[in-house]
Image 1 (tube, rainbow, N blue to C red):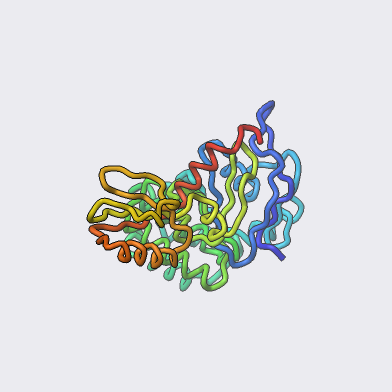
Image 2 (image 1 turned 90 degrees about the horizontal axis):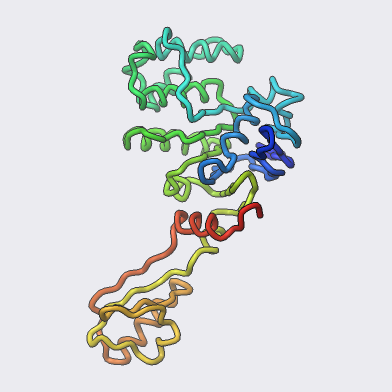
Length: 302
């Protein structure tokens, strides 16, 4: 059984189609990235998942529970951190989490609440009124609310937008631990380095359509090949390496590097030609390169 199943999900707002037949599964234990530019449909998909809006067609299930037909079980199975800062200004942090526990019928949840507060750096703010917190602290409380009922599936919609480095490090350490304990994590973010570092599977949306769904390693291999930039003395490239030449500028030679092991053969060829290496740099594409390339090259409406 998949953790989340999106089955041909369509969402229309009047004549505008925000989601156009989106289908994919998130498997149990995944650390899954859902990526796309602004307006791609990510938040709309999460809103349907969380029951904040209804799809025009298709279905979504969480841990086997349909979000429309079996909504109570589906809500218990998922914790969602929305983009917006939504809070009750009359409650303290601890009261907020205690009331959230009550929504799910949880009694004597104080030990888990204390653990969440500690792991999100909120212990010292536990008795502070919500309206007195900074924006970053409010976002930490939003994360805590999503975790308070220990859901097997956790959805983070831009959780680190506009927050400091300390929160990012604290949050990701805790979320990694939850993932290691078996929780399924779904992340949307514009910080693509986070997705590249954390996630094992990646989906990309563009204009409401799914344009990519792959293991991270496979997706990264679809990008531009690694390249090797050499500065040589004398500034001459051996003839045997000319087929690998991509560009030459100011005495620097950029070569294609199909596999890391090929570096050894390249260096041997240079040494055999009596040439010394003054400087060397190996570059490989990151997720941002691949994301930008895919968004540019997939036709509109494809």
